[in-house]
Image (cartoon, rainbow, N blue to C red; front, top):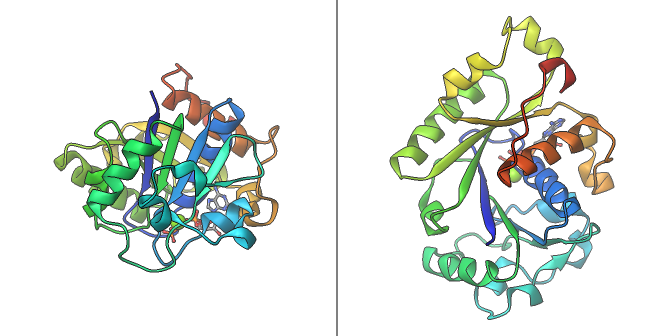
Length: 242
Ligand SMILES: Nc1ncnc2c1ncn2[C@@H]1O[C@H](COP(=O)(O)OP(=O)(O)OP(=O)(O)O)[C@@H](O)[C@H]1O
Ligand SMILES: [Mg+2]
């Protein structure tokens, strides 16, 4: 049975698209057929991160109306990873069409990751299958953590499942903030922690390289998170090792 994930955050620029891409690369490296769906209507970006921007003619709005989703999805440079770019215009994705799309895509892909824009418009979240796990991305910054707590509470109210991913973790800043451990962040956000992604140029350079080096910390962090999402028991690392 396929697994469905969706990135979310109230505050913009916290790394949702980078996390969606990193997880897509990680799941594909574990041998899965992965579909990444860019939900940022009018402001697409995953095509740039994955290096298929020059090829994009069709997008999610075309896939909504077709019986075979895989005819529209673009194969990325990593085997097993496919992308549906977001429509270049806003407002083309309806709840009903998205629901139908999910039913079709679930028959083809092992993993589907929806990368949503920032904000608190959750209208389309309810169109996703009930088993969808919402990946609340936050940076360790207190503003972002408070924001994640708000999003988590809202998802809970809607009966949706949320997990926290802390992105841009930097051990030096962490100790400067006098947060001796990560518990403070988890408590403040009230969402179960799934994993921590380091601050790294590797991630910043995704739009240039379209991949992550397998022996570096960011890729390893994404593989650990992917395995946890596949229900494997992977303990959290010591902060110094992240
Ligand atoms: N762990 C990281 N280390 C270094 N840079 C990062 C990291 N995560 C994200 N960035 C950088 O932060 C910027 C914003 O990232 P990204 O576009 O993934 O955020 P977003 O939450 O998807 O933004 P939006 O809300 O606009 O959709 C990008 O320049 C990206 O390269
Ligand atoms: Mg984004």
